[in-house]
Image (cartoon, rainbow, N blue to C red; front, side, top):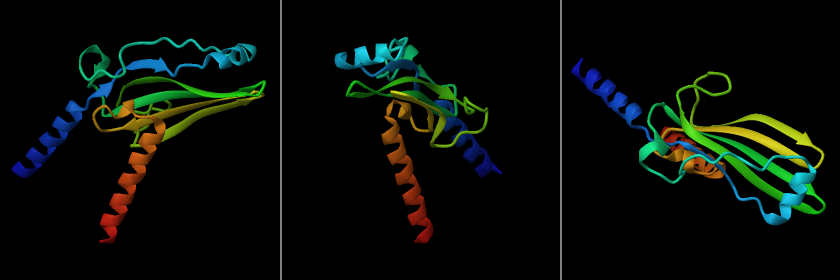
Length: 157
């Protein structure tokens, strides 16, 4: 019984202490691409909020079971100009933002809009280590793949 209580208290401590970035921002849009973006009537202004590199203070949240990074990825191709940039919001989550389901350590494709001249992809990525939502989508995918491979190897041994 005491072992179960200690185990559960250890789990609660881990859950409570998860630290996530809480901010929003965007990649810089190259000057050459701004004209193409304007032609397509796309907005390039994203409200910047907080310091996405902070590890303490008001730009950190600790009220979720997972860290989340909601990304909107723009791919634009007009007049021989091809550019890709991201806007993002980071924070804490206990359920999936799109359907209130239970998230896992992975990224979910939420929506894709493919128009003439541009594509907009919305992704929500969830992870469960401190400040993991500061990583790029590619880094999160690599970490998830590595964890999967390690668990597979452990099962085979």
